[in-house]
Amino acid sequence: MRKIYLILILILTFLSLSLSGCSLNHSANQLTQSVQPIKKLSYIKMVDENSGWALSNTLVLKTNNGGIDWIKVTPAVFSDNSDISGFFLSEKIGWIAVHVPDASYIRIYGTQNGGIDWYESKIQAQSSNSKMYFIDKEQGWLVTIGNAAAGYDPVSIFKTGDGGITWTHSSDVNTNGPKNGIYFKDNSNGWLTGQQPSGRTIYYITKDSGQSWNPRYFKVNQVNEDYFATTFPPIFSDKSIGFLPVSYDSQNFHTIVYTSLDGGETWLETTPVNIHVNSFSIFSNTCWISDGKELYRSDDLGKTWSKLNDAISSDNILDLNFVNSQTGWAVGQEGLYKTTDSGLNWSKVEIKLK
Image 1 (spheres, helix red, strand yellow):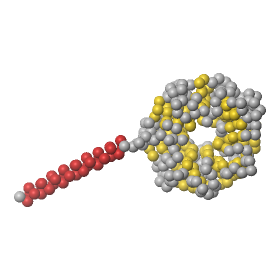
Image 2 (cartoon, helix red, strand yellow):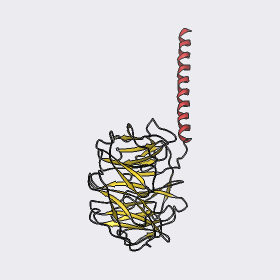
Image 3 (cartoon, helix red, strand yellow):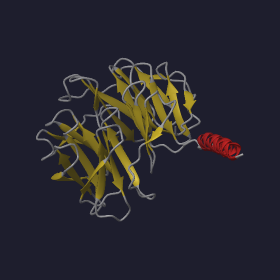
Image 4 (cartoon, rainbow, N blue to C red):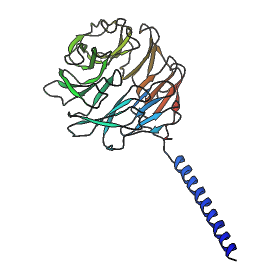
């Protein structure tokens, strides 16, 4: 009788554990299915067709299978009311700058292992916006825009030589109009760009790693003299070929994508496009530009432009990123889109956390 009693206890225990396991697995499946799609992205950086990063105001996401699945890799210590910007060098290496309202510093987080671990540093500067650029896993710069005063925006440049662990103040630049980005071709040569309301198209260059900056002017032949210009940071497809868009607000909006064949020493004026650019991307000799609604592509360094399919015109495109001549992504206010035919057709990508 005692043996029968022990056998019954063992059977009941086994059944209890089995049912418990089924219940847990079922709950996990329900949790996965209940994850809501993420719509509000602000930035995407795909390093190839499979691997890439995306940002929202409070999330850092990563994909390793072309956007089919996304993983949340946001640093653990994070404020819901913060605003973030980022720069990603590869599928493993990247940085984000976190701006908290009314804070006297900017938090910088860096990762060397794809967001599994993050290290933190601080820059003592008050800013609601900043942009970073890295040329390798150690050398990088950050530009932060302070409060506008006396008709100009003071811009501070910071530099790191150890992958963002420590930052040093390189220089301050007093410029007319807010700035929108920074780019470095190597450890010495860089560009600083933004808006210019004075009727002159100005960008700033450095040849000493950001310690000093000097203004440069574009000669404009196709624009009325009374205009407001927005210059964007250049992007180079190799050591020689570069693209630098400038949007002009004169009698009407239009954009000229200046091209360089000598590493940015000189820039050539190209054919204007009747839009005011807010995002652009390049691959080799091809350039894509968008004003949020319309999308254009040039395959000959800006000499001619083709208006592409209006498949994403119902959304407001915020960012473009092409990884080769055919495959690209576009971030819109209502979601993420992908093309595999150089921008002719787009499909919406549903972003769900894995």
